[in-house]
Length: 205
Image 1 (cartoon, one colour):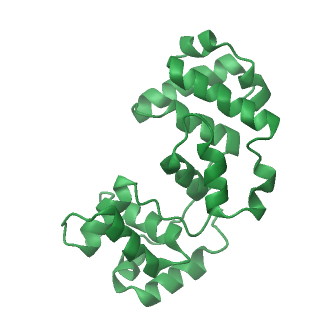
Image 2 (image 1 turned 180 degrees about the vertical axis):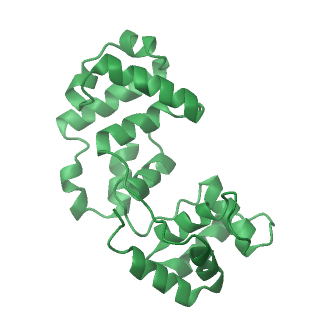
């Protein structure tokens, strides 16, 4: 399902930024899609850290099979050894159990996120072991569909800016931040299109 703000954001970005307008036009009718429930999304992000997509999927499948029900209480009660036998490292197993415990006790509570701003949610998430700011920002974009997230620590975003705005020259995080100010309040949408601009087959801007 397309985010409710998507068309408005595309129109606003295209009007104020000719480079962004060309990127948006080159990608046709595709748009950001939501991913999974909050607990499962964050658990998968922990499992997938620092391993290939293929390996992460294999490990995740084994975790789901062993768990039988991907719910916070169930995961919080799993033994570390059980998770290790699924291919999860000792540290990631501890992270998963910490995440599950915090969801179960309400320390991490999606019910209240609608009334919280992005930074409040990020602060709640990074208190969980194994979740850093980048992971929290990806969660805001892909799960909560927040419209104004600019993940300046994301290599894809920086590469997209370098390709489209700087003729391939290096861009610092602070420069990316400054450029992103012109995309408010739709920085998520601008980021998403910059990611798409790096895909094979994308028209050169």
